[in-house]
Image (cartoon, rainbow, N blue to C red; front, side):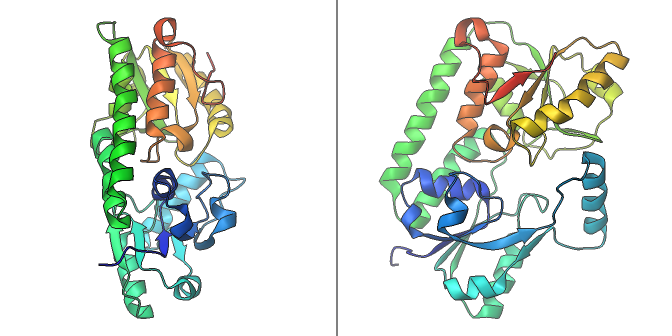
Length: 302
């Protein structure tokens, strides 16, 4: 099979992987959320749009998402005209979460409608190790396996360094919030990030979906540290929402430290930067041996 030369990524993390593999010159289409690297949207056609939630509160966004899901509506819009013009031979997508990106069945139907025979690769990691291995999946699809193996080895080496640094130290009890109104636990690979950074996740379940919780349940988990990492937001948005978290915890007598994180950059997108997230979390949990986290990655709110 010839090496694919026209790649469309319908997933921000897949876009990041393509760039990290040195194959950005083959990328022709991305989503409106593909903001890393910064030139991903300017160098490529945007083929997926989404609902404008700017100015909406977390509660309003949650209500809108629930209403659209109940009505069977997709949260993302595939621009079929743009896709037709690109004539891709490889499309990278997912089936993990309809709130995060277009699922592969929608993509398959669109390609069939357009008469396009592109290969479709769905990336659906459930753990941190799955995320690392998904780099190899993309590398195989792009026919750049040596580059994939090199990148995976580098990511694993960084994780090993963190593990060696925090080995044998007490593990703080950590509760990660992926949404704040209503509060959501963080599932899938996020609990693995906490463990890899030398902590113990006490609210979310590894490999499981994120689910709604309550503030009373969060406090009952007796966290030492609460991490605010709202899906769809970078650090400034997490800081803004973190004020409500501090208030809710204080009302219930919980004195856990509260940190805001660059969620989209380091926590919720299953790409190479999750390792950056592990390093930042290790700095939050074990600053005396790891060093304080980069202020652009995490900020203490209490």
